[in-house]
Length: 401
Image (tube, rainbow, N blue to C red; front, top):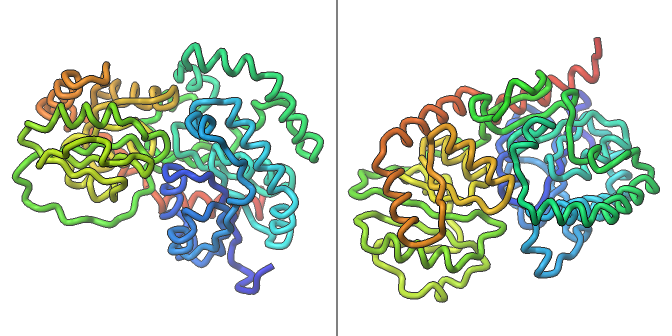
């Protein structure tokens, strides 16, 4: 146990190696540390600097994460059986060291990402109060029906059920009280859950109990200079995970090269920009950008519909062209479309890209609806509200009625 003020709360975070899942928690951690709490954060080397910049202590878990081959890397986020595989293998690899560290640290609660389910499993095993941190929509039996997985995804899961069940048995053998994979992936209405969106954006919000806290996006308060723009700006990004799509990027270049607009296109670290051909004068193409800064200057965002990207876009009132890559992103895209804050890209071709983007840019209703959702996000409380929720749950666990 560390030395320090015995009255401070000790809080442990667990997360997966993904920017969209880590970024929303950083301002929450900063708030908790600012309020005098001791935060231990299990993450990965790629995120160590920005986690420790909040004042938390980061423990890197890279050596325990299962090694993926190139084929499996491309399936991350799309293959449920692979996800269960990774969760079980990571939990079992971390089990001894983490359980010893947690027993020594004696945390008052564990806050774990909804996909970093090893945190949930450790909390269950060690009887530590657990809070789920959800950077996607909140899911229950009602909203899960909205995901509409494709035939290929469904067939793949059915074919691999035997393997999934064997993995669950490995957890049971290691002392985890798990009945089925549903126990791992689904929260019930009694699980304290922080959701980084607003009630207005959450589908079927009426089906969730008061254990679900819709705090809105947890976004840094940094305001970047917005100059007097002479031209509209289009921002294009397919996120930080499955973003290698040269055909799409080349189509964007052809669609917008002759328009009197400025284009910022983030293509991911796995894309060789030279392979995209000549870069038009109105394009800035980079492997990565400061998305918050770019969105504050953008008029339209062409996005893969990852929840974090959509939340950040709506936070700044930027309407979208929606190009989802898998079932969860399709659900997010449908919600944006349903609330008329963007249009779906029906086909990845030059003509459709150009038409859909100009439709969003020139029809003010999309901007107006994005601004209305932005207001709901700002009113939800963000990082401060999330930190207050965590501390109230800890207080309740220490002083039960």
